[in-house]
Image 1 (cartoon, rainbow, N blue to C red):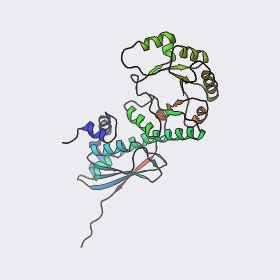
Image 2 (cartoon, helix red, strand yellow):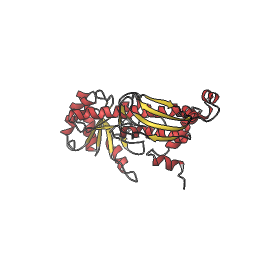
Image 3 (cartoon, helix red, strand yellow):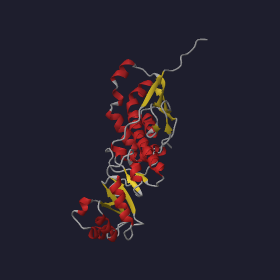
Image 4 (cartoon, rainbow, N blue to C red):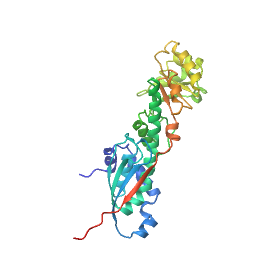
Length: 300
């Protein structure tokens, strides 16, 4: 029995709902109306294409690009797995079929590859920077994602060695300053504990020691030290560890953390760092598609 579209996407290791996203991307580029290609080649042209990395990094989006090729009526073969290191010239995907379809789907395939590999590469750079300090700080993503691309971007963070953290507002409890401007910490935590159903761990945003003390007294399980530079963050975290319950509470730093400065935050004593830049500012990793004409037939 043939697999349904969602089943094929999941079998390829893609998040649920990816098929609809990829089809929408092809429609956005009007895949079936490539006026240049269809005018030049009115009939089918058998061909093969190779997609290669043009710079060193971490591959992500290979499965998505391969699925785009399948949707476009082509036969893809992944040369590397998502999460693999690549260098300039490394082949990541081979596609066979009608050259007209290859040319028309090229940009959509490369867009996913470039964007997602950029996220994975930035994440790997941050993870390695933390590792060089000897700290065991977790690198987390955030909800600062492009609309519609969240699950693929979160997956790219995993490919880079990070943790996606909470996917959405329903999968985590984070008391931010704007919540606490309307409600004191003890009452807020009491209401959260009183809700029905499973309850995730409660994290509270803090910027000063007094806020951290109040959050711990109210029973916060995680603290988010937000928008402090590395040295002030280190001083605050050190003070938090001396509070009752502070030695065991998970402390996360966020706000202004980047792959370039994360090593300084790693020395602060934080257990985790969340980086919005991984998804909203990662530089795309360049890829190139080379179309290879079919071999010429030799006369006997």
